Image (tube, rainbow, N blue to C red; front, side):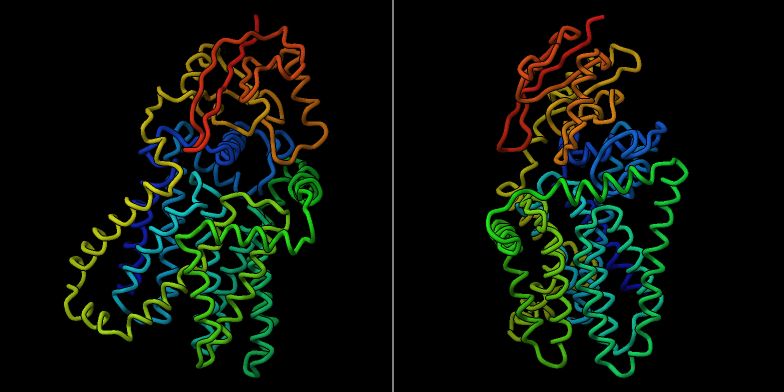
Length: 501
């Protein structure tokens, strides 16, 4: 439909513009120095070089994430432009499905175009939009699609179609093999679909068919993953690192009960994400209290929210970017406030005097860009980096020295991947190419052996000099050091060591 194409185009335009301003992956920034996204990129490039995740390069996220970064590295190995495109597209899809969901309640209203622009501004200026490129950010569209597809079927009083059930299965499979803690959302969604079908006499007979269609999508993604690791003889490494280490080694010690810990993490996420926290609560109340069978929609959102919260915070880690997953529920708050305005004369004036089509879009865009600029300057943690060129960064400064050695190898020691592999193009010197949040016992042994045996051409440390780790450093000499901000709150000093020939 033409209206769908226009909404999609508008959403993608917003994605390009808002991600272009707010994410460190954007061409406006010298590079994305976030440690997590650099870990993803290092493993993705390693795949292109014939290395197998987990077996040859240790990392803790899911394999599908690394496959995506390997594809990005095919055409954007030396820049973050490919990552920027990924972020812009996934963010655009998030806005598109949010707009489609809003249309279920508001109809073909021009206000929807304005709402998703407001949504974009709220998300990218939020506390949890820390650097750009997080798994939480890039999978928002999947969560919104899940709710939209079920709500649409619910309102049309029919079962999920094959495409809807299968696509949800595909997306659940991607979540499973990217970051399975987000599967709590699908557990809530599946529980609702089960309750919905069983309480509707016309749908009971279609329950098993819908389950089968959903599982078919999950199996399709999983088959590709297992085939890849089976061919490389690394299924055991996949299961050990991605599941056992994450489940057993990652959860931290918590005070009080697990539920108290989850609740405290959730409170923190809603409290600090003031841009959209109020939208979540107001939207949830709207769905739960609205009449005309909307209690089912409210139950669905509630179960998805509870499942997502438990899955996200079960490990007791309240990382800033975790809270971004809840932005998937913000559209409901925008819907309820739009419906409230609809009952006032203000909405009548909007429809009477607001020009149609392109003029409406331009005016809305002008207003929203003003909101974005004001909010971003106050809240976004990334804009400080736009003041630096590549040559100003410690990464490219060290890279000039590292690149004097042909086929150089590097060890990022004592901290998460700081982006030095990316900037220099150097290959990891050992399987444990940096410090991780999940550190198996052998990690320090292998890294220390790499240093004491002089296996790496270069070593980069942060916080401490290499000598302060109590190792035999006779194979290396300090050749450079420099300080650089990591975000608007921290400045770190980095040390570059080169092997003595």
